[in-house]
Image (cartoon, rainbow, N blue to C red; front, side):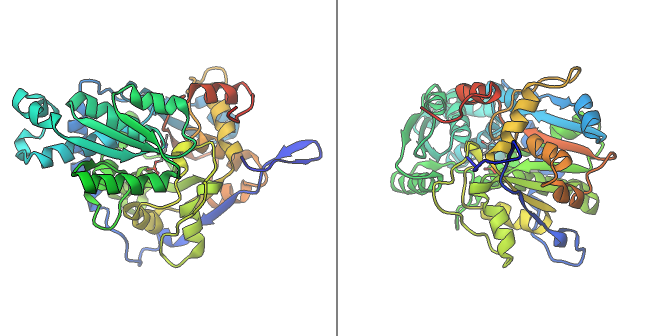
Length: 414
Ligand SMILES: Cc1ncc(COP(=O)(O)O)c(C=O)c1O
């Protein structure tokens, strides 16, 4: 947790840190390709998700009263707590990537590449001999285990030191072999990579490495279904601002690339939001040499899904070249967001949003109401004409932690 300092009886947070990327709108600059995130690919990925029996679009919640209270036109929150009944958005990416990896391992023809084709008895027997492996802070591993169970293959999952028992249990529930390692998230990724290589297992990781780009790209493409749904639900009307929370950056990178493909130069103002102890994108932008920078250490934050110190190189190029703002937040910002979403103004719907899900709404509040954040809010031109799209990427994936936070109790584990 960030240090709290008491000033004149008020509890104050550590200063916000932000980087305004003016080059993002420089028309003359050469930029990373976003071709892998075209509308055509997004439609294909969506068709795959629609083939899953549990598929339903998640709700887009319009917080009219809160928008009025904060003095903006619209606040829209895509509520991913409903995704496939798994409590988080990650299965969009993991399911698409695991499905592609299995289909490719079995050399299935393109016309055989449907979820139903993998359920065919003959193919199912071959799938049963496949093992996939991943490293996770929770949500991604749960998603991999979920699809592996449906396909009938084995899933092995590594988690970083300090992973909560609730999150471990949430993955074991789907029959995966889960181990907590003595290292952080990035160490778990390296270990999974070694074991995949040694045993010939399918590595289903959501972050790229040299010579490992295909699967992470499939994960990123999988997230596009969320954006396609959101824009359908908005009737195709473009928001002025989009905020995306960021761990390795696959989610925010996919979102930014989709917006570039869909809206080009007219795209919304895009903000990448990270926890202050794991702000690898913000730190890399500050360094200013165009290269991703690794943040080391224990990356302590209650935003477990965002506790990643190493940018995904596939996402780095996209976010570096197109994202307008990078903001690093203390944990208190997400506490604000969780409480606001869980206790809405009368007339607004409630959104159950977990630690990594609520940080963007908490940040929006501070950008509009907190004097320390106002310069960043002004740089983003947030005003009464703004219509803001946010993604609550998880529900109460750690129910005890969620309850402790919204009830105002200690967030420390006993
Ligand atoms: C709930 C939640 N939100 C956001 C993210 C960030 O996604 P990424 O690591 O792709 O930046 C994660 C990552 O696990 C997550 O679990």
